[in-house]
Image (cartoon, rainbow over all chains, first blue to last red; front, side, top):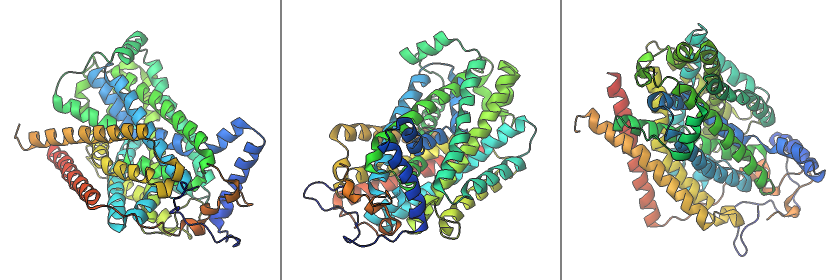
Length: 458
Length: 61
């Protein structure tokens, strides 16, 4: 990266003429970068795009996870098609703004979010941020396994299968010791997030109502204020989360993106946001079929969940596809969220943190990656877990803890010593501050209202 | 924006090597007002998070 004129860069450069000491991680990344260089030199645009997409798509489609899809479907089942459709688009636009900044910081500094916060602001803030992430990731990972369990239960498979399948996937994807391999496998799985769109189409919605809701944001939802606040907070938490910030910045650095790749990094992020929005809205439309069939009572469905309800109301095919979608959403998110846990844990103690290392070379990174998934898998084996409640509250907790991560991200992206000419412009900062304020407000409104009700003060 | 001089023969940027990224960036200097704002945000988040956890646990009962 290049510092601003007259300003010294905070990023260290090697001594002039010193032979670069290449580590195994560098050699793997060099192979990836050589392919990018050759594609760019040969003006092979589609190949270049193929080589450079990944972190943005995975962050966005990874966040279309089990709890998020259940949250979208719950919103559809509770309120039908209305203001939440355009609201969901708005939250994806918010996510796009935040994730572009993460990608930019990773590409310019070549460092992960956790590492930069630790080094730039000190251990206290670095560990606070990592602690927030590990807490929300553990809760969210439990919810991902729950989503897989709900999906597999539709096919009469037990919670043990969900736990085992999730762990096997984590071990399989990280076993190659190559970021590129991990990314391509998870991308291949994430394609099946489109199942939610298929479920929406097969549920035969009234497309005129979908268009009307998107254009007019009507009808506006009524009913309980607390349920409305819960669904607003969980919808925000379904699209912008702390793990996405850690993940996309770290993955962009791990992939080896440079400032020259920023345009393609933006394509990657926009493509991910658009696809995730379409698929998320697909889940909401599919869930809306339940609105006239006791949708507001879905909390009581417990383990049977949405697939069985959709099967009864919209047909067996819709229930089956929704169940498969939940398995995919949970599985992909288990991989991306456990990876973000690995990045955060290793970065917060200054340990090696790359998929290009072997297990022995980055024991903390891989240990945290597998360990977080293993703990979550063990928790879902506990009988009688309140499935839907865990899934919805995972997103709410993420929303409540998100403002801190966003504020540090804003400080990093405006740090001219780190970012040089790539700092945010004023208009970008205004939008970002509005997003942080909205996220903080939506999480707080639900937390305060629910708490006051729980202690019978209102 | 892009400086070809920073690119090594292996197509990595000079500051992209693992040896370089493992060298910490210098600490930022935060003003008292910024530190106070960060601590305020931290306290706010802890309180709001505790409320969410309390409500979740209370609803289980």
